[in-house]
View (cartoon, rainbow, N blue to C red):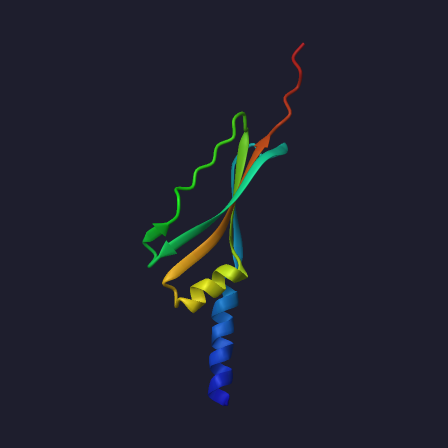
Length: 103
């Protein structure tokens, strides 16, 4: 019984310790959000990427924010596959600052 509690505690510690968010700011992001896109980033054996190539562009955007999250679902998939499949949730956001009207 004591061994099961220790293993369960270690598993939950590993599972929940990696949940986190990273934000990358590129350019001027103080304006209004004009476009966003969500996707999943999946790797097998930390080397091979699965899925289509991730690309994002917004015409006329002055800045971008890239948000990567390691959510609970991503941790569960990684845990059930013993780390063979790794997932992250990625959100791309484009921002446009309002330009003053020139006289």
